[in-house]
Image (cartoon, rainbow, N blue to C red; front, side, top):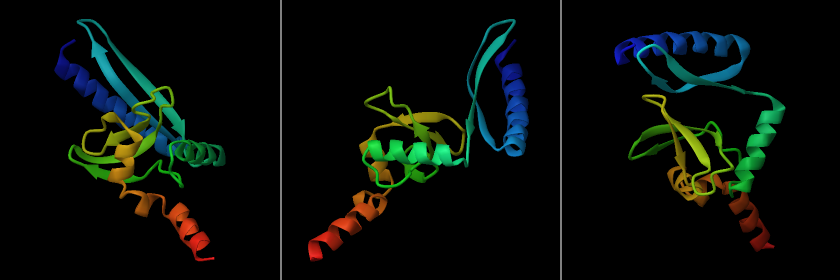
Amino acid sequence: MDKNRVIQISDKIKKALSDISESEGIQISIGPISFSQTSFIAKITGVEVGSDFVDKSNLLMSKRYGFSQNIVGMQFESKFGKFIIDGFKSSNRKYPVLATRVNDGKQYKFEKDSILKYLGGNNIINRKSNLKNLLDGEE
């Protein structure tokens, strides 16, 4: 198998996964593909979206990393492009936040402080906490 054939096949797989994602309400993505002369290997990941459990889990993880609200699904712009936050990888202490670049679908990992900066800092992302501190200070 050559590289071009693997790319064509992966594009067809992505299209099929997209159709399945929409019909099942699950976010399905294909990871990096490795290939040889006779075969290829790809990792496919499915994540349930829109359930209460997932929303609560994402909120708890967001709070664990110092955000006052759920940041999963938020978009931000960096010097490398536009990204959407996918979730967290708690086993990675230095780069726990996972985000996908919009233009090519590649997933990257980020430091929590970088994400806070890209999302507008504490004044924007942690505004609920800041509002509570301001209101507590006026009493």
